[in-house]
Length: 199
Image (tube, rainbow, N blue to C red; front, side):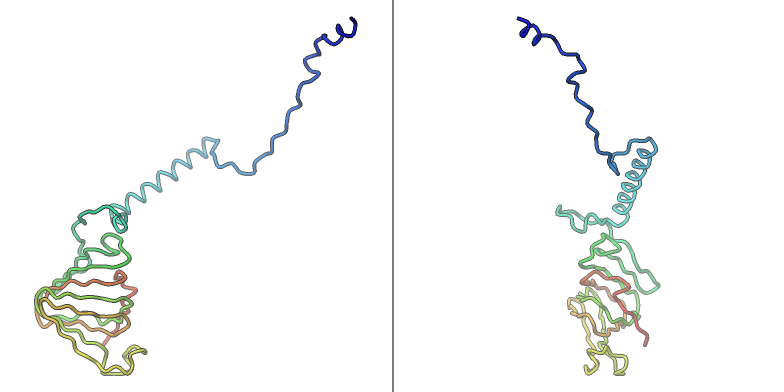
């Protein structure tokens, strides 16, 4: 019939063509499309990896919080004078450890270390010789405010003995002769935490 004939006539191809859907334009695309952007991205990644590798080789910072047992590299010498040498086994200057520092100190002859009011707690194990520590000062004006009423004390430790030196006090280390000791500071030693003083 005319009805069925009409219903089977194919429609023009354009009659039911879908209209293009406009896509929203992104203000920023994180993927570099231009050659210039790709070059800058590659350069940034390369520089970042190079800096990380350099810091790892120099400071060993990755070992500070490593969960893998290891043997630390030979400790660097951080102080060397005619009468004293300090090798830092662990700490900021050796393996980047911020929580504590461990130093091996060798004193060749009678000498005195700089007076300090440290912002860290310290254990000092004397391996050889004798070490003296003056705590406080006879002059009240030179004592830390919180210890203004504390009388000065002289502590002496010989081979096999250990000092406990809590933060905030005024300390003067001196040696009547050759001495060797290991110092452990918590947190790690840093010159900014030492607060050096003069006599």
